Length: 493
Image (tube, rainbow, N blue to C red; front, side, top):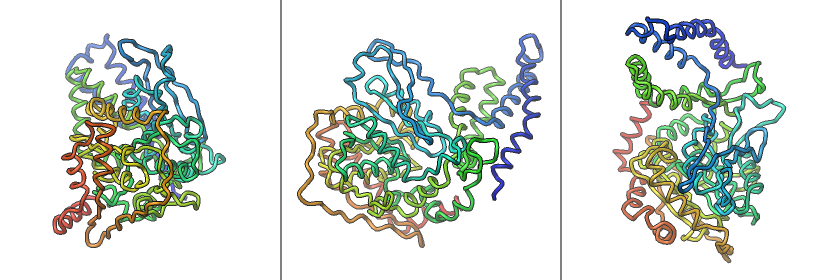
């Protein structure tokens, strides 16, 4: 049995006396009656105490904290309500108290990623849609808090959860998947479509999702494919120690995930903490508070079940089963050709270094039996992965396009009849990593993208932007591609 999680817990307990002494010192220095606290030395000591506390703390799950929203020129209180629950997750609805027109607005289920951070990371996403939609969000549970007796949870279970949510909340439901859940969401909807289920959502919006990681492979994609699932099993999976409800469960621990997150941009995090120290010493409370707000969210992480993590790595990043047409759910094929009714919008960020340009766009090409007028693509310029679902450009440019797309897929839309014959599409072959990855990208027919743009969202994805997206997703010349692959491999080995 591994002991990494046990040693981590032991280190936290060993730090407890130092944290108590640190807190006492900080309280003494912050006391208005203490003249030392107003000196440069005192402020430096107080700042150092806060930095020590923040770097050794185990961050608890944040709250959404959305107390109100503005609809038009009126403010309405917002109340959270759990409307669906299972051992590993629940659905939280945000009710606008006193807003009588709520039932006439589209129902939007935001599927949060189960990739380390809590669903509260999508606070800004939820807030942006509150005035125009009945918003619900999946709130996943920390695996260390789920008893072993509750059973396992893998990618198949995730898909089952999404299907159950659609049946519970539908049929007049719109689904928005942020990043990782793009794969289980489109798989769940394909299964519903294959069964002609009444719970098929009206639309799905996929944002920065790894539908086909062979396109514009990022460092994350390359490392996963190169090392294989066994490496992750041996190095990333640990046992929850006693003292937790989920004791003895195999998990990918949150503290390991956080180490990976920090390592990707370590220089930025070091600089941010140095700047916060200087803000505290200089008395710049507003800048320091912004730092606290960001890192209170960023540092709060949850454990993932080992079976879910490993199955996701293998299915999505190593084998790329979905775009190859080889993905199965409980031994039943996941056939994207079955999707004929649920409209699709794909949203990508120009500077996304987690899901490269073209990976989410693949969903549009892999569903040829869905009418072109039910497909929309938007490439957001000047944003990275986080900017796809949060920030000023998200609020000003992406949200209005998604809102228009959802409005075009209203309850009164005419159902699409299944075609007499199925159109078969051969997916692009997976590239080899030796000597360097050269991912192939199949051409996206103009009718699939430009017709949908004209029909549903005139301001979305003009031709130059679409051409740019396809160009970036296409493989680079062989020599340049080799140099890029070697540089990435050298940086991450």
